[in-house]
Image (cartoon, rainbow over all chains, first blue to last red; front, side, top):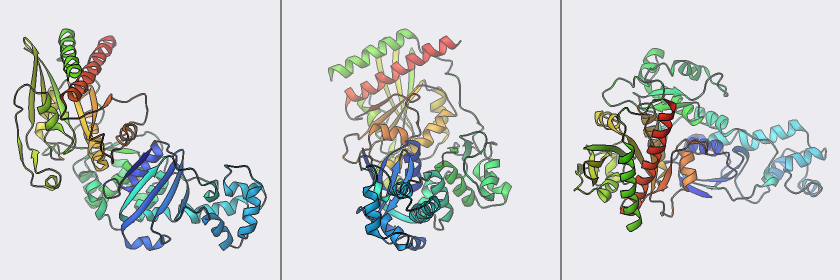
Length: 284
Length: 184
């Protein structure tokens, strides 16, 4: 399975949600076309490859030569590249390089965490500052075990971090929930992500039949700021937008409709219609 | 006269007007006008009020089809249409991931206002850039394979394809009706 598109159409946050919720395995390629200033914090590259395993992020590379993790280890002065390669030969196929080195006593868990932070947790949020780019997700791309530390990150957590870093929201403006929409919680109980103070305040006001505009007025913040926070909630799957009808102040609804309309259609009507449609379908 | 009302909805350019025109036995009521907003980049004309088509398949029995306005906003016309509808079809272009967001918005809008059977029709499924059906369903927010509406590829210009989509929806409606009766 391959899917392609442009970040201006389907934003990185939406892609991460799609890959996390679908528990996808494969390679997400991003080829930047327009970047923001914050992107200088990313390693310079023509393409970025983020690898997913069952919906979690396992590696980020800027090339497909399977050498980058070794180079990171060597740059830190922990092991030389020939040594890494010799140790790797001792491990079973499909063992991540990080866990292989740990099993052989060459690196410890703390070192793997540092590597993963440098390789994945620090740079990926800056991918969200790419204003536009082409993307492809290839579910058939084999996992690069040589680039994997053995640790994983939640795409939702990373997306939350990335969207908090974002300064220029221009490319996402048409993707934000509408000011007169309300937000509906998609989960009950404790939110599985750490929310900052502003997010926590907004979270407490959603699901109360208040539009985004009204939440902004209540909290004394700009509508745009509340829209951005609500977009983050949507990306991590904890809230959903419920649009209002133009002219209505807000939808006076807080739960899903639960009954069929009273004016039902008779069985004989349905049978006649089905026969007619199937005839039309089969004749054509 | 017994009438069943089906709403055909979806993002701009998904094929709503074509779907209705293809199956309607009357000249579909055309409310397409020159697009003036961002819609113009996609279509020279868009539906400003609603499309209407009719299919009379026997004495005193007819299917009415209503297409929602093309612009990406919900107005009073939506409220009128969906409150009278027995079922609805959400048409989505398979090759336009930028439309999935608005399609999700429509789904949430409908889910919180009415509980009626629905079908997802995927148009342009033969386009080289089309996303696979399974992935579109996921992108629309249906995470469980056991709790999804029926979904079919639709060629809005082909009467057999449109008839097939409607037949699948009618079958879903009949099943839902039986389930609702058994709950009473």
